[in-house]
Amino acid sequence: MKLDAKIDEMYLLREQKRGLEAQIKEVNAAIAACNDWLLDKLREVGTTTARGQTASATITESIVPNIEDWGAVSDWIIENDGVYLVHRRISAGPWKELMDAGIVVPGIAPYTKTSISLRKLGA
Image (cartoon, rainbow, N blue to C red; front, side):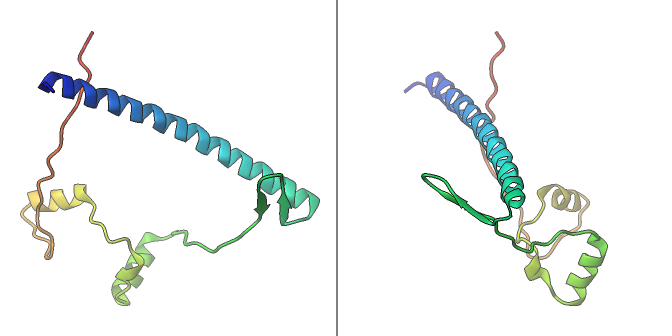
């Protein structure tokens, strides 16, 4: 395959992916609307479980964290060695700013990620 044909193929695949992502976004919105409607109806009729012909629905609850004061959380993490609460990922933007300023964060090495930048040609 020639170089230009492969570039065009990659562009078409990326556009196909964008179209599918838009469809997924629409489906997720429809699912969220169904979820809200079902929660309201189940509560309205006073039950936590109902079923259709192919599936059942049950109201479930779980307690999840909602940070209201990042400063307090950060202080607690530092004082209690609580880094296990945080996702193990470094934010690239702020890390690069530190690196550009000559500040070395121990345990992190720069890695050059190589990829293809693909843009549509003008008509």
